[in-house]
Amino acid sequence: MNDIENNSIAKKSKQNTKSLAIWTGTWLVSLALVAFGPLLLWDYHQAISLCAIALNVVMGYKMIMVNKQHLEDLDELQQRIHLVAMALSLGVSMVFGAVYGLLESIRLVEFEPNPSGVLFVMGISYAVGMVLAHRKYS
Image 1 (spheres, helix red, strand yellow):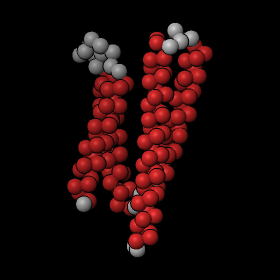
Image 2 (cartoon, rainbow, N blue to C red):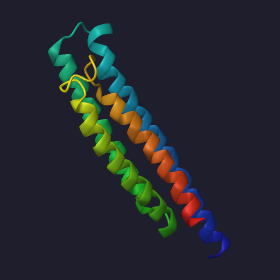
Image 3 (tube, rainbow, N blue to C red):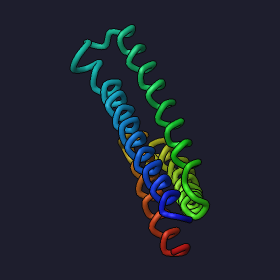
Image 4 (cartoon, one colour):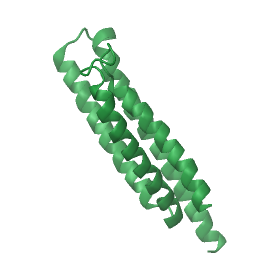
């Protein structure tokens, strides 16, 4: 590859990363609005809550599409690294989520399991997968 191609790839990657950060942040803000808005802002008004949920779904869709574009623009090695990390994250999240969801019903915990616990495990397992894949392929 020549310097012009490398510069173009680096520029595209920087642009994709910035766009992904913006849309992920926007989705997170809209999720916080769904989670805390009914209690703090609009006293559980159903129509406003439904609008906030619709906004969250739209922001989530846009975040997914930007993430897809980001992955498509990566080189083959970077795509492979992300694929390995995503596979690990999916597997760990599925196994953890299934067991975590049953903890209350089989009376091992007294609290109702919260989906945010699964998201936390998903994020951590993805990060671990990225580190492991980088070590394997670099």
